Length: 481
Image 1 (cartoon, rainbow, N blue to C red):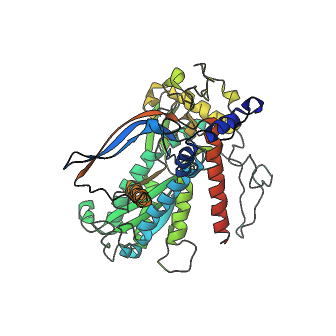
Image 2: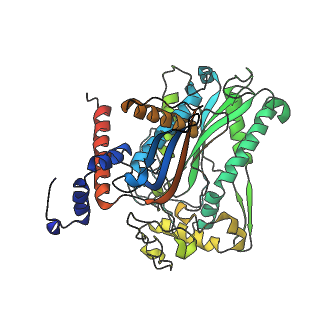
Image 3: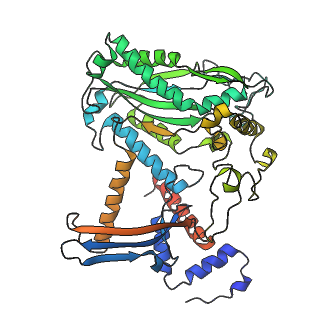
């Protein structure tokens, strides 16, 4: 055992790491952290689990979290946001990739014949709420000056911000984000109607011969507005296992998408801001996804990778925050606890329970004004159901970032169950334990939430694990061996 005088170690994290390294059961602590793969905010659980043979009553295995070096069981946070946990978001992106890819090429209990079904990649955008700084291009793809007469660089912070903030419709922008999910729901309804109309059928008759399946993901534009990327596919009445009729073609699907997008309207009425009619933007992109083996850019793999990339992003990609603005003293939001029980100061109030001035938020002026608009609209009783204060950090958007129809392909839950089963089998194989018979064994567990995060020293070990794995991943990607 190494003995050091820790009084001369300046960093609390380093001192805590040295304490952990000198722990008699450090190998087990390191094993737990390695198992999490670099998760930055693991969930700490306390409790026990017992495996019992139901035929004899014999206890086959028993586990108690209090026996761990840290006194708790660490489990991955599973956060999909790359800004919150790069390790877990990478797993989420991989699951999303396989979910989308299975609905295009088959696999994961989806038949390979699904690749012959008509399918398109559609992008539905937000309308304009005022001119913004941008990088227009010529027909040849060369950049042209913005309306401000400046040729912006791709990384210019002005991109996406209003040319004239005083006339920009911030209320309309926030209300669009807040109703984006409702717009999508109405779009899917109108899409089924438009397809039936183009086939000369009633909706009831159309449902007997085909089904519309989709998977979509939300993305924030630089101007702080969401738009949706969607894979939309035509199936037979039983979903991905049956083909649609021959007359249900890609052309019919694409034409119906364009018509449905134009029909969508959501009316918003308020005494304070008047009547608004929310619609999709004019920029609607609908492209056929190439058949299997076709030499083109829009392939199954490319679309799946594109959707998976945006599944792990959040509103912070547009310059806003990735955490809620209010804690419990402010607006009923639970305060985050550090490993040793100390409260993490609220983003908005600093732990005082009083809202911090917006000027102290580390965001751009455009984003700050969108957050301010969320707070102002959130005070109005007609918008109480939108919970704009709660979702101010998301600039009003409160929908799911990735959704799919029931019969599109497999589910994220099924992918996680398969991964959990595989890991359990690996553990039993490594420990030379027999596989438990589900018909004769019973697992009884009692678990309680203890907190989130590591101790300062364990956080350094987790960062090292993530850094090492990231280097290995980059080395493999670059063709190393």
